[in-house]
Length: 210
Image 1 (cartoon, one colour):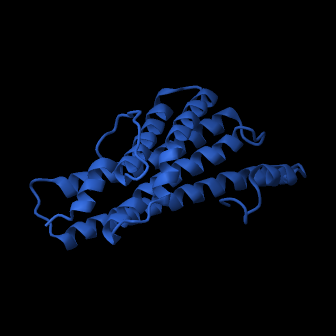
Image 2: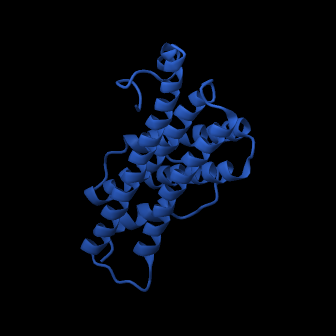
Image 3: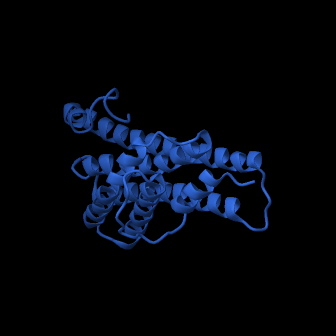
């Protein structure tokens, strides 16, 4: 039998790939989750349609800031059963990927150790990782709601656990990707005895993602 809380949350989280600007109810986690996924999807779409790297990022940042209220409020929701909480955590990881992308790439745009071509490649890398994360959520929807499958609660939770683990792997990849890019900047700055500028821009390893 389908767990109704998981089903309801998944329906709202993974329903659409087109961004819809909607009013949300603070106490409704399904609406908050839907806002996060819609924002992530629009970030992916914007990244693939805007060619100029700075214009691209300004649009991405705008979308992220529009969705951040959903992200912050969904993080604060704690009255969910265990199964639904795993779905919530999966959605929040996608929000985390967006947050790492926006916060760090904005600094990279002001980093003289990267040229325009490199910044474009870095932005494309972030977009690709975010795309894979959102695709996993769509895969989850197809499995959970497929009329051709008759999954019991254990099988459904196995699917949710697998998708959570895979999305967590992409989250870790984004952190690693960010670390490596900042490390490149640090090494370039070191050659010119200007590492303090990089540390001031990104912070120390204890303060940031690297």
